[in-house]
Amino acid sequence: MENNNAIIDLMKQIGLSEYESKAYLSLLKSNPANGYKLSISSNIPRSRIYEVLNRLILKQMVYIHPNWEKKYYVPVEPEIVLRRIQNQFTVAIKKIETYAQSIRIVNHK
Image (cartoon, rainbow, N blue to C red; front, side):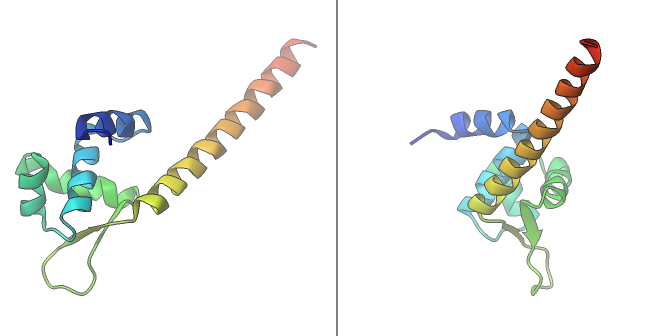
């Protein structure tokens, strides 16, 4: 099994920041968690944790538990997150390939 640092490096390769990676992995281990608890478990400064969590919400990797008065964060299942990221990369790659092909065709005329 890979260690946390190796996994964080891999997560950075697919577009996540170090703090986003740490927060998501920590949330997988202690689910659900409030921002304060997550800040401690992930070693992310409290002044940054809510900004990081908001970015993860925008990336659809985390959501706020809907049935509690206080904010508790819940991770989206890794399989769902990874499938979504894979689909986004696949779409982007196909668009780049199409664009690159169109440039080659224009330049060869």
